[in-house]
Image (cartoon, rainbow over all chains, first blue to last red; front, side, top):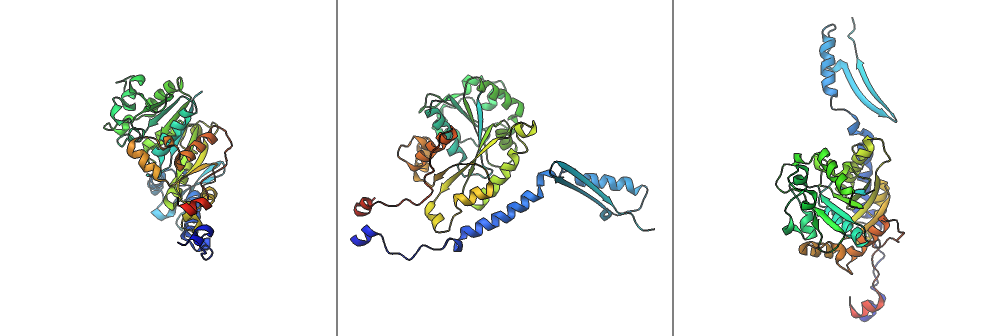
Length: 93
Length: 269
């Protein structure tokens, strides 16, 4: 490095544009995955849902012939409400 | 009333124990009687970072099981008068760390200490949940890197749902974002997430940045919290963090690439 360079700094081309760096990719990936994970609210869905679904299936099967796919059990959190939605599709006669 | 602060992150290796040691030492340097508890049962390391590993006789599990008194288990720090360390057990079963037991220990400590700093283990299992359960404040240690940011986000979810304050519907835990291992020159090149990126994603109040620093490894080699290494950038950064935590308004440093002065350029750094 010459003395001139030492004093005035190297004349380098302008610094690389930020958006071409991998940090921008990292930011975008994080925003997408976290929006997904926060939206999912993994913790909100209680882990008894599959058992609940299986037991409902047993009870209903005593009276009506239905299949596993005809029972949908879903849990949702909307603001301050927790909604347990049970949807049973009865077979056509 | 003692304040209980958890140092947490989700991800391992981001600087929780380094931060716990220097933050607790910083509070003590400012004249506050402080105790720092290692919650990492089975993988204790705070004692090594604080340089008191050879003085551990009893640990927190002994206190919980009534095998030793609290005073027998507390280790007085060799650098600060106001600082004590409560080590984790290296050999006992993790399940011995019960919420009831920890509550009893914390209540007893609260009679004597102004600040109780809880060094959380990595992960989101029982140890980490126990460390954060009683917290009034949380310092979320995050590296400017995708895995660390995601895990911090997860921990924020747990602070808001699994802590005592959340469960008992009290005022929420005060959260502070601490970005560690920060390299402004890499941020400038677009190779590393900036502090603003991390702040924007995690959306909690920002308490400061600790630059990537050679002093951290040197300090841990010798068992001295890095805050005691006067003149080191990481030491200044932690002193700022402690001051801000105590309510002082300090301008943020270490965010930009240090401009080399004319004299330094001429005569070398």
